Amino acid sequence: MIEKVIEGKAYVDGAFIECCIGVEEERIVAVKKVLKGEETIRFKKGLILPAAIDVHVHFREPGFPQKEDFSTGTKAAAFGGVSCVLDMPNTKPPTTTSASCRDKISIAERKAYIDFGIYAGVTKENLEQLCDISKVASAFKVYLGGSTNTEAFNMDLLNVLASKTLEKVFAFHAEDEKCLSMNRIKENNLRDHAISRPGECEKKAVKEILRVFSTSTNHRVHICHVSSAATMSDLTNKPEWVTVGVTPHHLLLTSKDNLTFKETYYKVNPPLRSPVDRDSLWDAIIKGTIDVLESDHAPHTVEEKEQEFEKAPSGIPGTETMLPLMLYQFIKRDIPLSRLISLACEKPAETFGINKGKIEQGRDADFIVVDLKSIISIKSEELHSRCGWTPFEGFPAVFPKDVFVRGERIIESRELVGERGFGRFVESEGLSKESP
Ligand code: NCD
Ligand code: ZN
Picture (spheres, rainbow, N blue to C red):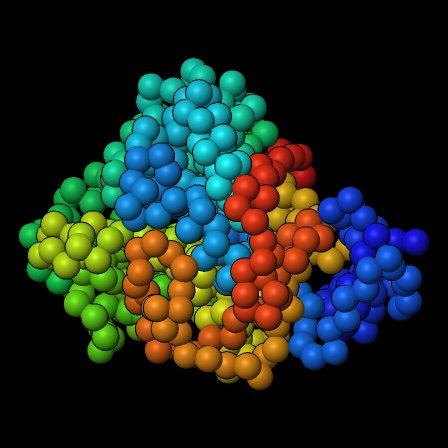
């Protein structure tokens, strides 16, 4: 008899079917009409979806635990239906060596409620060590423009990166530093921030990445958080080895909105732009040019965000609200849920080589249960990030009721039942340019 059976209406092979999902030793072993289990959990209401993978979070450990740590960050992610995160390198110290990667992994193993991987940052100093680092890290992050607690990588060295043979993804923060410095002005508000970091600089960086990496035989490239119509127009016929990510804040907020809080709370890189830019991102979601939904969860304290505009750090929290906001939006906009599942689960898994993201035999048994009629309005005091605020206060959203990671229920009826330290480092495998 199978260890555990989860029964209900589930998203399997592109359709919703009434079925039983058999789980043994953390993985899905069968999906059938009828299965007998030692334990059966039946969901009469709601839909069973694969859990989301958030490939872009800044959980701030080591170095800035007052903003977030792996315990609060992964708890927040879990409540938002995320079973696995990939953590960014701009911590203190940054994860730019094998040793600092190992240290971060061991911190996370003690604290995480859900699974995780980590990025190693690429700098001009560690170029010769990337092969060793690739044995420890899940993926590489390259900042082409400077941002919070990180400097820009010299664009002239991109060809050195492209010549490497490393079976890990290069994820790019695509803003061209030279272009940024030419446009920089004194910033008093969001409008100035968008002028300082125009879409043209994003477009330039993306063009250069595509040009240089088209000669590489090996690498798959991920462009993080695209934000402008200028960039999107260049990506419509992008090559197969390029994936493109988008954040909920670039899809839902613009610098021209009537915003609820002080503008510093919406200061982020790349910046919030115009309604035309925002609409181009929704178009790209519908057309399929955008592949991945990622939160760029970048929490900062209220104290930091209360400073004057120029001093306040860039970054917006969002891992907990990412999938719930989008579940509501996709229903409201009448976009098929299959598209959202591709963006939040399937493509992240495929892009970063993670054995999750689909309800099928052999994958980790990570799912969520959602009732699409249960729409609530987001309240910061009900969220779990240590930063304690959200730019999406009052936004309608659909939160998962139950969340399973590797067959274990960690959220039950919106209550945390999982354990700190349960989360594990995930392998990322099979990532050459030719692989799917
Ligand atoms: C990020 C942060 O705060 O770590 N901020 C942001 O605005 N996205 C840094 C980054 O990745 O750009
Ligand atoms: Zn980021």
